[in-house]
Image (cartoon, helix red, strand yellow):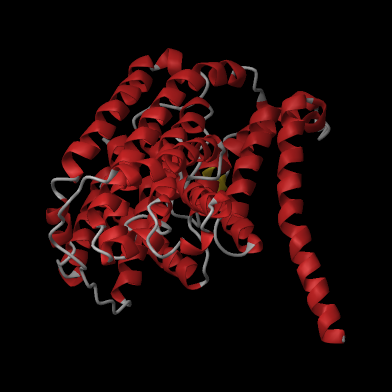
Length: 439
């Protein structure tokens, strides 16, 4: 069900992006550029159809990729020891912090804050309380569902309430859904390139669908014979990013299921949901829970087909739902969130914690900080601590163990290289600016 919601959202975000110029998902933001312009030109039908076709092709390829790549990747993951997992987690945290929108320092700081919150509870080695502030309920740590609901649901409600937004639905009747032969010809290679790029970014920990869709759009614009037309309603500008974000959505299941390393905040939620059910994703998930893995693969085939069958005929209904005033929706969302949080452990403390994380999420928005690094830090922090301690025990305190092992050394080199790629241009820009001011 969660997987269905995930790739359903990855597809559904394009409908509002094309018709209303409001992306339902961050990965659909780039679809607004050409999709909405096509709708204004009376070509909403072909834009929606190409979005559906691109998503279906990319989803099918992503599903095949999971079935093919997961087994070899699992065999490789079985060679991972404590140093390798420790280095991999550092790489995932840093790439997430680096690749999110906004400042590099903010991204790293938010990730480290998430790690600190993840360490709340009883120390696994000494049994001492950490960051509990005398609250017995926190001895078992902060429940993941509390953090997720607070950062996403509660904070999102508060942010939306202060936005005085007038939603102008462009059209409610969509005619001529079928794209022309010229549209299909123009979209063919953008869909293929978007699928390939999205699959790559999906497998890469910390990247995700948003970066994939923007990358695919930038690639198409760069190699196009008419780059000046992008943003005016060209169908390639819809086909490539939509294929990329769906391929990335499917591909992100690979590191999550086989390595236990989520590639995005949404995958972190998926990881938390699996852990709540007593399933720990990792190298042995294919052998210990084959019904889960292959059931998920089968659901992707069914889900991708249903996306096309259900969404295109029901576009009018989705557009009508956009007219529901938000002031009617937010009290319902809040009440159900509080009931859901309370019923997990029958604890009022959890509700208060949700409010606390809602305030924290609101502060993140105001400071232009992405919540994704925090969520990954919260989930991966305890795993990082456990593997770091194991590595130190194996090496008797010698930090060189992370360099002696080739896989861990490779991840650490990749992390440092990424940091340098982000830092050096920034220093160069400041230096050039200082020289100009001096002149």
